[in-house]
Structures are given as structure tokens and as C-alpha cells.
Image (cartoon, rainbow, N blue to C red; front, top):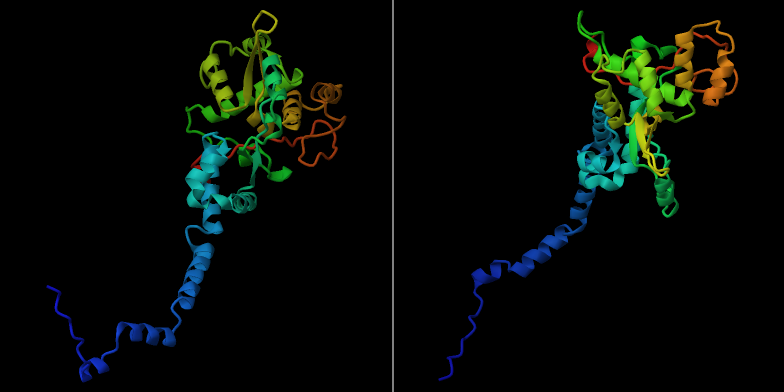
Length: 320
């Protein structure tokens, strides 16, 4: 049986006075466009977030400065993937702008600059063959460390030393560590950039450091210096006999360069040593009369200023 047809109810006066849904939407659109103001509000919110919010360049650069100082305190390289994960988060595309802003703050406030570490040298035959078959050498390392850029008059131990003086009777471990790796890097560079393990052992034995050092045993000290990137240990058995040599690592090249080594040697020998500059020039490849200054200005030999390695001070030094 077919369903009964429904009759449409005639609109009453009450219905006529009540606006329908379509009429309400039309009236709201006439009073204020539905999308334009919403889009303007979103743009204003995004601008405010860019200027002052957690995703702003100013805030992200501050976070990168803190992260860089924390990494340098532990002698850990600042790696780009870690920066993207721990600092930038969802703002990874802002890396360049944030990096430049953070570097500017480090230079203006702390007297330090983020510099990229060089790639490790290819010394063995196997490494050179692998490098020749790829473009690995042309790529950047993607790692940075902090380097001291203080003016020469502030490059003194009291300003950029490893940290505050320890309490009486307590050994300055960090200061001893800086001195030891600076000396080892100097020996390597003075030997032409590569030092055999037997020769390094002989030098350490002359300083009574063949068994123990102020920091730790000789083996643990060398392992720590290698881990921190100051030197690298190269093993080569291409000739049938294993040869072990030491070379300067990426961090060592940045923190203790040839001019720093020259200043270190001048301080050890003191003024008035005959032919010291000529011997330094031959060993390090420096121009005659060149001194350890950032701009390479010439000065007399035996000067008092020393370009100390740019290590940040340890925590607590601000209160001293």
C-alpha cells in the first residue's frame, strides 16, 4: 500500500519572524566577511610568533648559544643534526638565520666564534683510494667548535685560562690537561705534522710521563686526547709491518694552530735564543719574524704576548 502523501504545513506568523539557517549565514556574511578577518588574525599571530614566540630567530639563537657553550664545556663538537633535533625542532629550515644570529651573539658577548672543523686527513693508501673514488673531501664536516677571538691584549692566562684556581692542595686537572695536549700537538707540528709512536714515547719518557701524568696514565691520557679530537692515531700496515703515527686532529688544528705553537716555544725558551725564529720557520713553515697574532703582524722575537688556546672558562669562574 503506497505511503500516505505528506502535506506541507503552511508557514505561520511565528515561522516568518524566525530567521532560517540560510538567512543567518547570509546576514553574518553581510556584517563581516567570514574568511578575510580570520586570515588577517592568523597572519598577525604568525608575525607575533616570529618576533617574540618560541619559534622566533631571537629565541632559537639564544638556545643555540646555550647549546654551543654546553658542548664546548664538554669538548663535544656542535653537530648540525643535533642542532636540528635539540634546538630547532620543527624550525629546521631556519638553521642558517639562527646560526648567524647565534654566532653574532657569541662574538659580541663571549668573545668566541663557531668555526667549522676540517675533515680528517686521508693518510693511508686505503683512505686515499676511498677518497679518490668519492667526493667526500669536497663536503664540509658539518661540525663546529668555539674558537677564541679575543683581542691580543686579553689573551692571557688570567682571562682565558682553563678555569679558576683550584682550592689549596687540589690539583688543577683541566689546566694540566690543556698543557699536556698543547705540548703533544706542538711536538707533532714541530716534527713536520706526523710523529711516530716510538718518538712520542721517548719525549714523554724524558718528562717522566711514560707511566703516569697529572691527569691519568699515559694510555688513558692519549685515549682522551684522541677522543676529544686534538690528535688522531694512524695505523698503517701497507708495508707488511704495522706503523703507528700521531697527527693533529680537527679540533687541534682549530684550537692550537702553528702560531700558537710558535708562541708556546718562544715562552719556553725565553728571549735571546739565537736562531730560534729561523728554526721555528723551518719546522712550522712560518715566515721569518712572524709572531703569534691573529692578523699576522710582524714583531720582534721573544715578545711577552702568547696566543693561548681558546678554551672557555669552567663553570664558577664568573664568581671569582
